[in-house]
Amino acid sequence: MLRSVFLPLITCLLISPAFADLPKAEGEVLLTVTGKITHTNQQDTAVFDLSLLESLEQQEIITHNPWFSGSNRYYGPLGRSLVKAVGADFNSNMRVTSLNGFITEIPVSDFVKYDVILALKKNGKYQRIRDRGPIFTIYPFDQHPKLNTEKHYNRSVWQVEKIEFY
Amino acid sequence: MVKNKLLHQARVWSLPTLAGAFLLAALTLLYILQSREQEIQTAERDDVLWAAYQLDRENLKLNSLLNRYQYKQNAKVWKDARTRFEILYSRVTVLRHGQYNNLIEVKERTRDLSLQSFQIIDLMDERFFTHNASSPENLTKLLQLSLQLHRVTEELVTTLKSVSSQLNTQKRQELRQLYHYLLIIIVLLILTMSLIIYLLIKKMSEARQAQYQAQLMATELETAVQKAEAGSQAKTDFLATMSHEIRTPMNGVLGMSELLFETSLSSEQKKYTHAINNSATALMRLLNELMDISKLEAGRLVLDYRKTALAPLLNEVIDFFAAELNQKPVTFNLELAPEADAFYNTDPGRLRQVLLNLLGNAFKFTDQGRVTLRIKPTPEGLLFEVEDTGVGIDEAVQQRMFETFTQADASISRRYGGTGLAISKRIIEQMGGAIHLRSRLNEGSCFYFTLPLEPLQN
Image 1 (cartoon, rainbow over the protein chains, first blue to last red):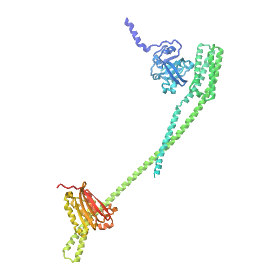
Image 2: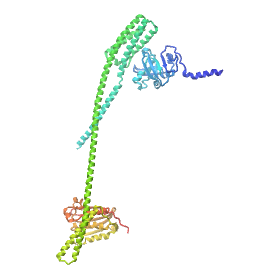
Image 3: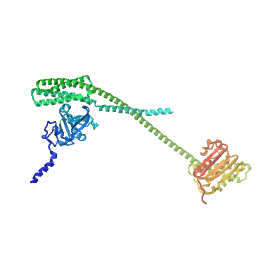
Image 4: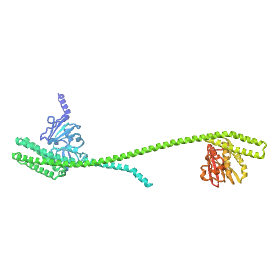
């Protein structure tokens, strides 16, 4: 009797970390993640609202970038933590789409090599769409000067809406 | 001379220096081109253009959404339109705050247009945030503003495009100019290099030619030497044969003249017979010397080494000159070092011949004074010195004294009357020694030689 209860439970515990579903997104959806991912919360996609994004590991980056004068303080979930949360492969690639339909491809390895964040706040304030929010991919340009190339400027996508792993 | 050398050196180094200068210039140009390539300005300009274009495009999208909302009052469409406006607004900030602000002010017109677009968008922003933003009147106003913005952004795009093209063309022209210079320098470099290579090849072929010439000359010289040697050999052979052939009849003459003495002769006949005998003896000696020379030349002189006591050999030689000593006011000294008086392994006949020759010369050319024969041991062997106080020999002719058939000069030659010195030299050399001469005109001469001889132990 006892055995018949425990066995499925143990099996469930063993498997669950790998296929655990993400918590449901309650608020307005800011980010939709699709493609080759194992952790989902809405059919085969993972959707994130603000609180879900803020539940991931956060990081602050103070850096210059080509779009704003001076150095600014950005804050948001680490790119790595998002990849982990959706259970994507670190050797895969991302197709990042912004609100205006701009599409950029980024290798996930960038998120492993550098502390790239999906910035939600700039200088302590949430970024509005008109401030190029709500999600701004920020590379640590000042910390890694070699990132100051056209290629990485291009990967620093703003108004991120969708990420597809492939 | 020094100036010439400097000039030559300058000429030698001028080409490589020129090539180096061209190379340096080419590298500098390449560096400039490389840094120009990396200039981000072009990209930034493109970004501004892109932002302006995006502004135009986003405005059109907004416009279409607002139009749709006018026909169908749908909350979702209105929300989309709001989002679209936010995106449009973000485009303005790109133009307004971007680090390439300075670029957009390249031209008055672009600045004016940008300012106009900012103003219009600010007006639209106000409209979107009024109390009844989605009212039909407000909507019409928003559509009007959108249309106005479209005109401005369209012109902005075209203006920026033309500015960009102008700058691009200018830049391209500059680049083309640089490439042109680079091409010229490379051509010059190639020409200089070709010249250097040409000169090197020329120099190499010249060197090869010279080497070939030298080889040719060496071969010619060798043949000449061989010919000369062959000629000399033939002469020597001829001399040897002739001497030998003449000696036989000469022996007949000598023998017969001696036999003639045995017969009864008148005093006059005796005198003639004596003359015949003397002449024959002289001729015989000359023939013997000739034989010796030819043997020496041919390397056929065989030494007859045997155990020889030095003192008796010397006495024998001195006795030979006893008669001569009585005729002239010349004294003779024999200085034989006591430690040199011993037995030696040598050819006594040839040693006697050499000493007779040297002493004969000494007596012959010394009219008064002293002749000394000195023998003493040295580390190299036994030193023989024949010293006289005779006429001496001019320094200029001392060198040729030992050459075959040569004497100091014609006058000495006449008095000398032989080839003894040359033969002595050859004999001494064959015995492992060397003969030398020191002499001063009118003061005397000293011929000396060292033979590698060591006293035998009993």
